[in-house]
Image (cartoon, rainbow over all chains, first blue to last red; front, side, top):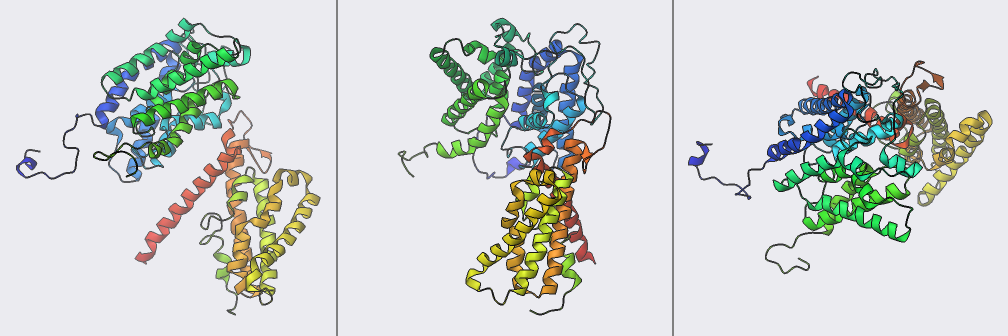
Amino acid sequence: MSRMSRYLEIGSSPHVTSGASVDVIMRNVVYALLPVCAFAIYSFGAAAALVLVTATLSCVATEQVLCRLLSRPSTVGDWSVTITGILYGLTLPPDLPLWMVAVGGVFAVAVGKFLFGGLGSNAFNPALVGRAFLQAAFPQAMTHWAAPLGDARFMDLPQSTLALPFVEPGYDAVTTATPLALMKFEGIQAANQELMYGLTAGSTGETCAVLIALGGLYLVARNMMNWRTPISILTTVAILTLLMNWLEPGDYPRPAFMLFSGGLMLGAVYMATDMVASPITNAGCWLYGALIGLLVVVIRFWGGMPEGVMYAILLANAVSPHIDRLIQPRVFGTRGGKT
Amino acid sequence: MNQPPTTDEFVKGLWRDNPVFVQVLGMCPALAVSNTAINALAMGLATSFVLLMSGISVSLLRRFIPREARIVCYICIIASFVTVVDYAIAAISLELYRSLGAFIALIVVNCLILGRAEAFASKNTVGRSVLDALGMGVGFTVALLSIGIVREILGSNSLFGIALFPDGFQTWTVMVLPSGGFFAMALWLLVVNRIKERQALKEPAQ
């Protein structure tokens, strides 16, 4: 650098940067996710730890191998694939067989990221692409939920975790339904405290709404995340739920249940805000968030499945380039209108 | 115009100009009815038969079909042979007929058949057209079969309806769904293009 500075430097803008390059932001997202991971391991035990480790390792290894195959410089060092791996692990059921975790991780990075051209070009959130593939490939295993805070969770592994590759996993007797499934099929709503503190069944990282929101606040405070997207999603869901409750009292869950159950908090804070697959402008983020919120409510209330955050975000990812085309910022120095 | 038939007319459809993996024609049946090996084989054979018979007919009639109305004539010829195939499959196996469903009738609009009639049979002798149709038909059948085998093994744990792995094989539901067709197709395209790339790299060195 010192040798370079003796010459007149010629480069295109921006000339002043905040110093927050990809790896700095991504490392901070990892910090924000650590409490969520810790709680996942506390709640679901050794199985969740193995799922998270396998998910991260399979994603990182795929990135490394693909970079080498394409003779590109390795992009493992910028932490983005680590985020993908951790987020992907957090969306999986805790007792999913590890070979399925690895299959989805390879799929997430190879198809969700590299097929589109690598970091910065992925049309969809790679972590959710991996999960969506598993959901389509192994629907039974992906809807099998271990009970949280089991007695022997640190000592014993569930039988299914270590199932051999290509072998159908067997399950121990202990299994529960997620709060959303209970609501949808039996009309039972979990209490707010249980949902906020994460005492319910669900994907490894989606249960504790408070920790997820705190991690999000940290990122917003460091100005590393556009807060408009999650706020827009959560507000839309709350307003639509209130509206349905007002129209037909008693038929629909209360807004707090909708906000804190399932993958909504995790999806709104960490998945929908994927910097590549979400719109660029602030107004676009509001619209994008409202679309996700609307889709979540529609799928949860009237769809066949209890949870729809994953599909809502993937669909909105597909729309986001069009949102960018629709909402373009005024060119500096013009008077708005057509340019 | 009246060159003698060569083996190249037959061979090119197998690999170099494979209808599915290189020309990417006839995607509708290749993706829709390749969920089992049996379905894929039946669709491949049915299409090959129509391809062969329409190739012969178009080639024989090529001096009588007016240029302005040629597409209509091709479609009429193809449709008559598809009707034959339709009744034949229904007579051979009603089960197969039901699982192929509308896709038998849709052979009429398979652009592979119309494409060969337009691009080859209408300009060449019967002998060359027969070889071309046979090559394309075999190439199409092999391609469909290779997609169908992957999908059936992973998605249903069987091959040609015979169960494969007895103790608790985890089936990949997605491979039986329509999206599985795209995944299997993409895998084979990856393999084929990789081999073709290698061949292209080697050729200048010779």
